Image (cartoon, rainbow, N blue to C red; front, side, top):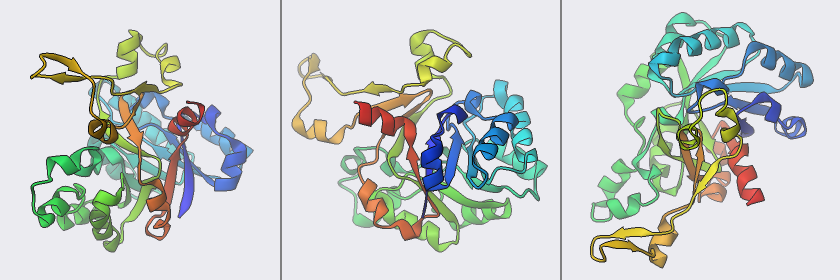
Length: 286
């Protein structure tokens, strides 16, 4: 397993860490304005010639679809990027038809490979089900041979996954198909929106909203609404243990993967292990 650093902007790349790890994942799973451009990729390659540069493309609204297509064409034309990850079916369909013989590897992103187990309290939602049903529910939407064959025929070579102890059986099924798996070691996606939560909260628009995204916002559980009490009450210790802190970065809400070490001990299953530098920096400083 190679370790890759996930950063949103080229200027955030730590060249020393990149020399140690060898690969970087640039872009964002939710914001089209964080896609890098040709000049930035060339500059990064000039600074570190042997670095693997991977691009993560976001969920895209109809308004920004043409911008995303143009940027994608520009990035592929550089012949300097190693892979493209897609979190939007429209952009994926465009890429596989426009660039069928590209030198760039195509991967499915986490927004297209979700799992019921991504919910932190999924064990409580399916606790009364048989073990076989729990296994099925905790799998990924990619756990379907017909889907996998469809994506392989489109040129997809692998997928980004939110992997935890709860969905390890679904992971094993996917690795057996020959698809490469890219695991996110320190984060799981809890929610995604077409509307940017941080921009909406601060009442800003692009490009002014960029400053709001430099530091993810933290959401912590403080109170619960109680029908019985007809008001807010303090959460119990059990609830506090189940509900994690959330980190809002743009229009994607993450939480820390509690099974980080579990994944490291199974590194042979993964092509890449990604560390989200935004969340890691926030947790270190906080």
